Image 1 (tube, rainbow over the protein chains, first blue to last red):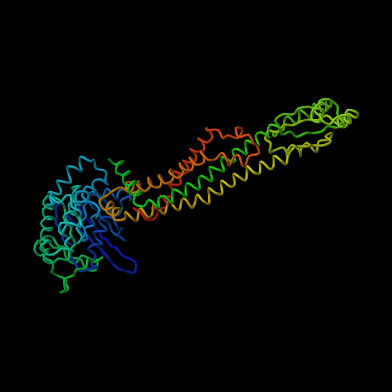
Image 2 (image 1 turned 60 degrees about the horizontal axis):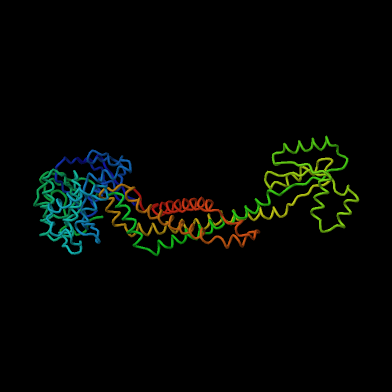
Length: 240
Length: 293
């Protein structure tokens, strides 16, 4: 489903955001990308979404050779994946329903499909009752659910989540993780970058640890901490 | 669904910033009023030239020693010149008759001419294909042996042709200078619209909206601004051109210089096409660099 082959990304000024990353993620897997701030978690996701091109190496996502993809095909790549961010990225002037429907409208889905799929996905994330609320009327956890609904409404094969619990308290985070787990159990591959030790340790899924752009650990059923020392202080920073 | 969506995006965008949109529309309006106006004025000058055109003749006064054969040969030769439309032989007696008509109120003059017919020589009256090319003919005729003198009513035509050309230059100048400013103003409104929607555009990218889907509302907005300005300009010139044309024409009869509706319509379509092009180019310019893939 996802394959990286010797992927390196250098930024100007000699920053190594990814160093010779080779990684394979099978369909239906749930993978945590962990590591300190600036270790390259977000960069990997940006590379997989073709928001950036690697300096060298190759990436494949959902059967598409990402770094060789013609620019007009990039939207097709993004339709086959869903993405969730720490800051939700909801449109403040649209209701919950409209925010989710927007994702289908702008890829030209017919109205009857939208009318059918949006309520369905809102039910999945548990927000049917709040479909007409504006984002500012929702709690952080609810806003993140809307953002997950928007990412999942088109039934993507892969869901990327970049620090989805970064702005949420632990209790709320658990709810979001349950939701992501549920989505994973429908067969969707989930790749989640996170700092959250507790979540990683509790879920016991595959863990890919990055340090200074390179993979230092790849362990199925792993915990947050294993090989590399992690700073004592809890990191709130999202990295990029 | 798609079109409706794209169209509603455009309408929203225009509503969001009506003043900026208005400034772009006015820029197009002013540009095209001046351009369209000078096209119409030029048309009326050309009508003036046209009236003169038909009556422009280069007159080659012939020496009395030329034989009829020589004159006929000369006439046939001139007829082959590319800038010559028609050559007519005007005999001494015809010249005298014309003179009598022209100076009917001055019998003393007529008497003088009648006493000495050699004062009025025979002539070839040459009609140019284009009034403006009379001087070419004049120069060629002047060097022909047997032609005593050449005359043409040149200065008046020159003045009209020059005025017509000035109008064209003016129109082109306006088109370039003000057209460029209108283009930049439209580009600016589009850039502001893109900026206002940057969050939305970011999300559209994220969920896989195609590049065209993102761009079309902005192209439509530019198109709207261009066409709105052009339509207003066409309307303004269509309704208000008369006094200006009358002011600038040598003809006083207003009916003679009434610009035909078909001409106005034709030029209006051109103006609209130009407005539309400016709008599309302007929005392309505005999106340049801000809406990359």
